Length: 495
Image 1 (cartoon, one colour):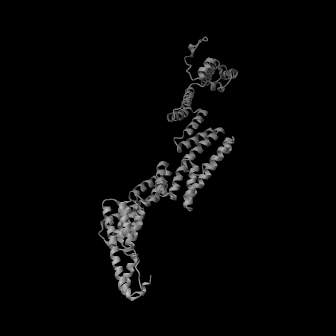
Image 2: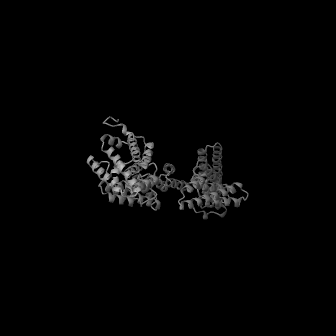
Image 3: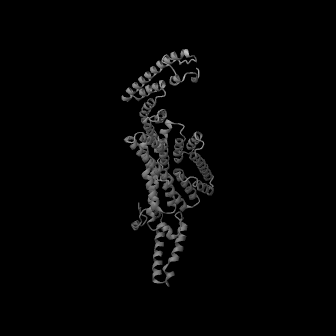
């Protein structure tokens, strides 16, 4: 092949076009010769070849149009591709293939074809319009705006370009609102904006990822995972989708699996700051929690309590793990006799996860230990409604019985003894209290004091009568009402 400068000026333009075709209809390359004898022969040969190739390319295009009109887009794509292979400098062929790719939802490829079309012909209005639509579908409202402005320069009255330009402006506004909402941690607002934006930019992975991340932060993990998984099916190397997938697992307390996804995201995008931070938090949280668990197993409850406290400061957003940490700290607190703090920790756990049965059970036990029986019954009822097991039923009945007993006179308190007091301890306590409240001892007191002491003296007698009688004591301890106990005299069977 010889340089074109060796040919006369009148043939150079023709040869350039022939050369761009790359081949002749016979499948041979054009042979250029430096000798004048071959100018006419070569030029005529190339001219015939060019006309033949143009005709062939147009034929492919017409076949593509036919398939396109029948909505057989895959076949249309094949024929438009053939036309481009024959005539790669024809802008309309790229435009037609871009339209077909849009129908096949292959928007990135359609964008490339649209851009190539307008590079070949800057006045190709349909090419600019299709490029703008692709930018919109892919979520690039600024680029779409530039394309539609170009169309309006070429044709100021183009209604379609005007409407699409307004849509691009709306999309930009949703983006702005979403960014502001994310900054203020108003994740519901972000999800709302992204849902509206995705109606226009249905192929925008960036919007989908932002929505998925906010769904995860709202605790709507199945929805977030579904969005991330859809993107990963199309692009398994998408670092943002890998990060969101890991975030869902992390917030569901599947920390080991979450770390795997964070590491994979960082492998795809080493500068992914969110994945790096989440990975660091996940590892720190797991390590601190395991340290606390080990200290608890070793009966070092003070150390366990402190380690759980430290773990709770690592990531306030991890609701499920923090709920477990609060419950664990409550268990350690109960061992340390910090019952009120344990109740508060269980309440914090339930606020984070109102389905956390273990926290309800732990709080109910603490209520029982502090004789707050109404609260204990309420928690056990909640547990039994959720999980109707025989164990939970027994716990509820025990709490209900203790509540019933707590509403009667507490004869143990009247005598100042424990519920496990022996017969001798009960007798000694009775003598002491009876002497303390005997009316003769308060004969010089005011009438009000005498009346109060007399009342207490009678209560001491009642308490001793019940607790010194094995049968009455057993019925009293079982929660039975003893008001009619007077009918059971003389050793008769009261059962």
